[in-house]
Length: 487
Image 1: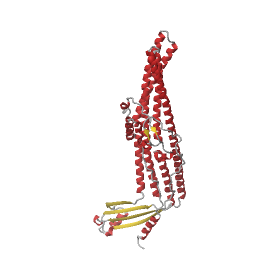
Image 2 (image 1 turned 60 degrees about the vertical axis):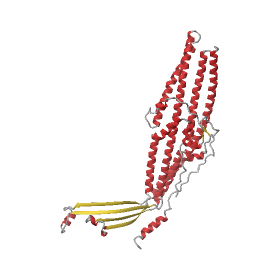
Image 3 (image 1 turned 180 degrees about the vertical axis):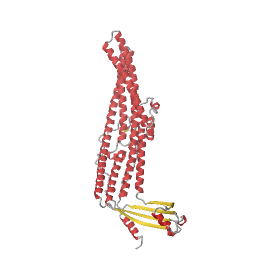
Image 4 (image 1 turned 90 degrees about the horizontal axis):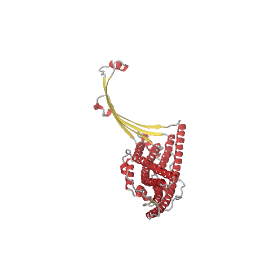
């Protein structure tokens, strides 16, 4: 039997046992989900018709160039996204390290030394008695070492699978943060346009109430109005005045929040958004897909599922500790205590090969505890995944219902505003012929403006409900179904 026979036998055994990975095989959870959403109704909304294919860049469905620019800026500049990307880089580094652990490692070392021997220690006293003793000495060495842990029972492969799943979860988390940021930017933009619309209406209400109070005061001076009517008109005027600063404060706060969301100092985008613009129309949703589609469309669910896969792989990593660990190492080098020229001479060479074994034979109690902990973490991840799926379907159902009902409320308010508009025109016509007073016209204007304010609120909330629907359905990213870790 040659010196190579044990090494070849070890390699053959490692190859034979390469598929004997410890741990349970991962399978995607089979969750009972409804065939369709119960709140999926006929298309609602007044804007562009959108399908599931339009959800990737859903913010374009509002047909507002400023909104599109802000969302793009937010996706490029937001600091929450920057943190998520940094976490993704960390997960990628962990995956690279886990993959590298499966490969052999090698190291080259070299040294050269020159030293002087003490004459006062025992060795020096002994050598100094020898003829031709030289206190100065030289040594040279150069070695190539190679080592490889044979992953016979899959501990390293399970660690690699867990790191891969963690990396995929981090990638999905980046998409989840991007979706949240895009939704927040769109929601805040719609809120800003809504507050601006209400502020314009409030200024008109203040003007009407100011004129109305002056008219009532004039009638009171001529004995044609009571003190009660005067006090009531002044109270209405005070209420109209108080609405303006409150709306201005809300607008300033929303503009500052938008700047921080876009990763810039407060006030940066204020000038661009200071001019009032029309509240974007709510897109018309023609399809919402099925609840099962959320598993592959919502990045937060994808991240939760990948964390479950990582927990499953770590069970196998812990179970592999039941079995022995084999390693191979080899050393090839040369050493000389003479001159450097003798370093690579045949007599200076040395080599060795080692087959290593490590087995935690009397530590099974600790391994049992590690496996139990890993299984507990997997059960926790499974429960978290199931809960995330339930909450996702709940969010979709609530968003679809909220969108439909707010659109119905907006339609009713629009009809009422049209009716009051006709009443105002009739009052103007009666005033021009002397059949009605200026106060009658102002009262009609007040009613129209009050309903206009309610309609602006309803229109804003309907558009924001559309943003919530896009977010709940997982719009804003594309991903292929991941390949499950298999053995």
